Image (cartoon, rainbow, N blue to C red; front, side, top):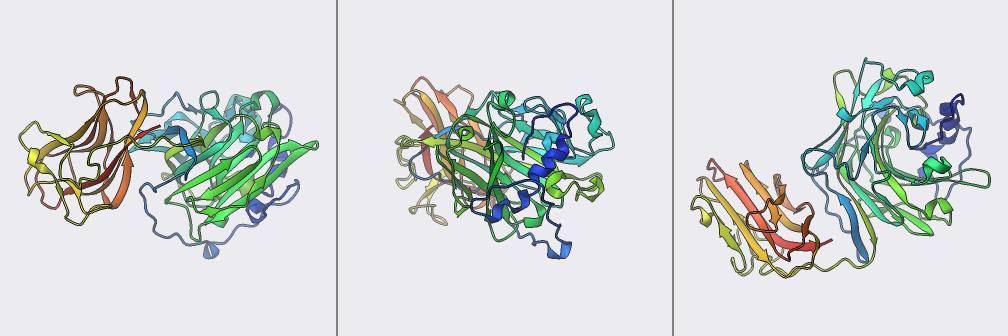
Length: 470
């Protein structure tokens, strides 16, 4: 997602088209310095398009590997965007980069209504509009044909180096241009490309199986670009995948799903020795697609396309603190170490068992009754904790509808908990709570479930609970 400094009266979109014309070829080279002036590649016909395969829609397990400490994250919990982390753009003029249509001639007009948080996900929604919206500062570029969503962390989350990764589902279809990327925090002062840009993920319908990645900077009196890619082997659209860059003072490594690695970018540019901020957006059309007419975009009237983000994490080098010690965390010793509370005498709905086995070892915790309603809170009190921020993680299998089903933690018996609602998981799946601040050394953690109508086919199995200090 290249940016350019908009100067009134200058043909910014045409200039950016030159800069961006070879973007579709970036992934094919290991270290490619690009120059402008080339034509965009032709589009594939529908017959040539890579078929979509069925993909797992839930969260993918992610491990940054040894030597990484989680420094910042947003898990998009609750029902609104965390304004301490993000700013929502509400115009096709970007006041940070001072340009119209984002320097790439995109067809969308970002607005707040198209940025939502629900079900533990950030959702950026694109839709056609007949409203003909545009910012008066961009009157010379004509109205936009779509509404969409775009957020950034400028002035709120800015970091240098580390491992930046997100779990994202991008939408399929011609003209979709979802992106996860960064810009140098000094862009308002020095402009683009002197600020530097790191494109972790860009997706193009011509190459549906590819995560395309790039870096842009200024050197030798001109814009410089380098690009790579990672091929999943099937379309990565319409399913969640993890996209990451590992960034140091002299190299960048891009990975898809933690295992498919792009080429390594060796660098020593000043633009990549400073703080960058994060951008997430769903663009449509623009110069990467050769400036298609709005009618050509694969988004019919009355329908929507969404880019969904489960989480964004920024790791820094260093050892992750070991998990706090829990008693009988895998329920191999029955219910030793765990307490039970129920408001209606249904404490027996929680028990350790071997049915279907556990994730590791033989035993796990089950919440279940034989077709009768129940409510139960299975928890372990932990004391002597150092002040800091913690998360609770556990592995879950679940089937059926429950009135309430949560992994939660709270700092006292009467305190409001932080929690994650448990979705249905046919296979063992790792879940985790939002972060919780501990200042008094005490935490209660565990599972709270309630079924107000009995169904013997409904169950929740839980195993391998961990308390992690961030």
